[in-house]
Amino acid sequence: MLRPLTSALRLLRPWKPLQTRGCASDGAARGREIQVRALEGPDQGITEILMNRPRARNALGNVFVRELLEALAQLREDRQVRVLLFRSAVKGVFCAGADLKEREQMSEAEVEVFVQRLRGMMTEIAAFPAPTIAALDGFALGGGLELALACDLRVAASTAVMGLIETTRGLLPGAGGTQRLPRCLGVALAKELIFTGRRLSGTQAQVLGLVNHAVVQNEEGNAAYHRARALAQEILPQAPIAVRLSKVAIDRGMEVDIASGMAIEGICYAQNIPTQDRLEGMAAFREKRPPKFVGK
Image (cartoon, rainbow, N blue to C red):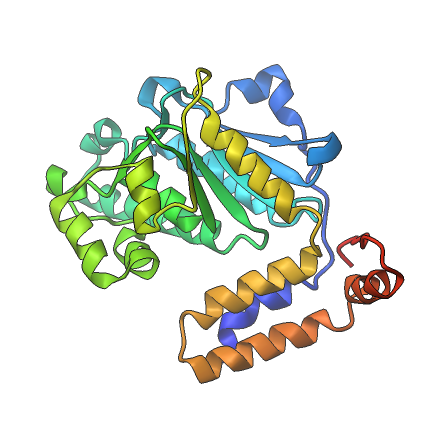
């Protein structure tokens, strides 16, 4: 039962700052399909993953996957990242799914290896230690929705279109969709959506519980991003270690029976007891003032 707590134990290791923070502003970074931007001022603590592959509508190709995995590997070691927000730089689309044109050039063996990489990438997103939010301002189809499902929270524009449409292409979801959608919506509804390849609007997705919030789209086409950012701002003031351990307790607890889940919660709680933030929270309550958490 202790095996699922690897992520929790990793939280207590020393952290290293990300050396490329803010790199999205220079010319070299602008040419990348995945850009990383650490926000400043009142948004300090929010880091954005900006998906920027306009000609392919952010389709999941080899370069895209490699750059995203590289970014995640660096960011997971950065203590300053309190919330990780996934958004698109391409108006009208979050991620159109797999790059089928690229995949047509692959052999069957190469396809199998690539899909394994995709599945691994989604697992890395799901296992990211800080809360993750997907801002769906446009199409999120197939692998694009699987990417959003790997995030902790999802915000969509009411006009966004999403669905696991693989069966309409002679495929089945292969990057976690058959596992994460049932855990999100329940087995029967997930089967219906996957079997039919149905597309949902952001409003419909909220009614079903697929997204946390659906908002009216604005003229700039980034309403979901602004709502996702506001949601991230609600998380920022909270104790970072407590938030991260809560994520571990929930995620690992959902994989086991409730008795084992209670034990996992207990282990996570025990890790939080010696933190400075817990003492600060108690002192702030006693002194009737807002707490100042530092993530230690």
